[in-house]
Length: 284
Image 1: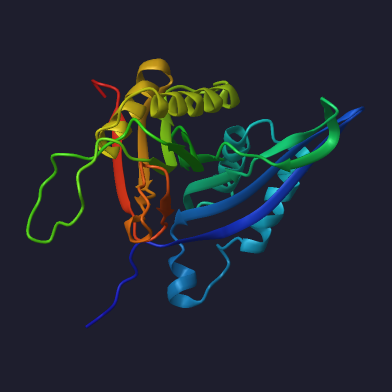
Image 2: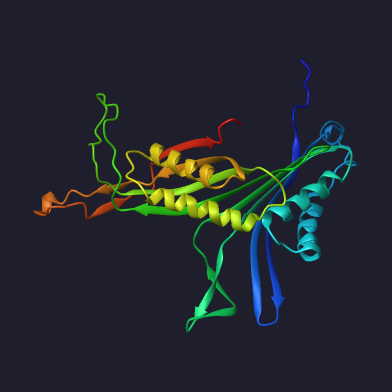
C-alpha cells in the first residue's frame, strides 16, 4: 500500500511583538502576538527532503519585527494584511497565507487625574483579534474578534422549563448570576475600514446587549448579542460567539442555621457549559 501526502502547510506561531511609538510628551504602546501560516505545494521538502522552496520560519519571525519598524502598526488588520501579501508573494509554491494577531490590552496610567505619558497598566475589556487570509489571485478576507472578555450580571437571568429526566438534579430558577467569558469573531464587508473604531463599537454593542434584557438562557443572550451587532454595524456580515457558562452555585447554609437569599455563591470554573452560535445578515 502506497502513501500520498495530503494537505499540508507550515508557519511561525506566537511571535511576541511590542512596538513603542515615541512622540514628544507621549508614547503609544502596541502589544501583539502574531501567528503566520502558509499553505501551498511543499511536497519536495516532505517527500524528498528538498528545502529549496521553503522560507525558514525564523525568517518569518524577522519579517514581523522588520515590518513593525518599517511600516508601523496603525491597526492590527492592516498590519496583518501587509504581512499576508508579503508572504504570499514569497514564491510560487505558496498559494495561501493567513495571519492571526492578538492584541493584548494596556491602558495608560492616570496620575493625579492626568494621563501619564509613558506608564501603562494591563487593561481590561478583552483581547483584540484580527485575521487576514489571502490566496493567490484573490482579495484578502478580513476578520476581527475579541477574547477573554469576562462579564457578569447578578440578576435578570434564569433557567427554567428545560428537559428533565431521571438524571436531572438541577433546580429551576428565575433569578441567578449569569457570568461568561465572551469570545467573538466577525467578518467584515468592505475594505479600508476604520477598524479600530469598528472594533470598539462592536465590543460596546456586545456589552450593552448582554446587560439590557432578562436572559432566560445563555442561548437567548447569545442571539440577542449577535443580532445587536448585525443591526447596528452594517460593515459586519456575520458574527460567531462562544459563551462558556461560568456557574455560580448558591451555597446551602442551612447546616449552620442560616438562610441564603441569593447572596453567597461558590464560583466554579470546571466543568462548565459552552454555548456557541453564528448570527448572519439575512440574504447572505
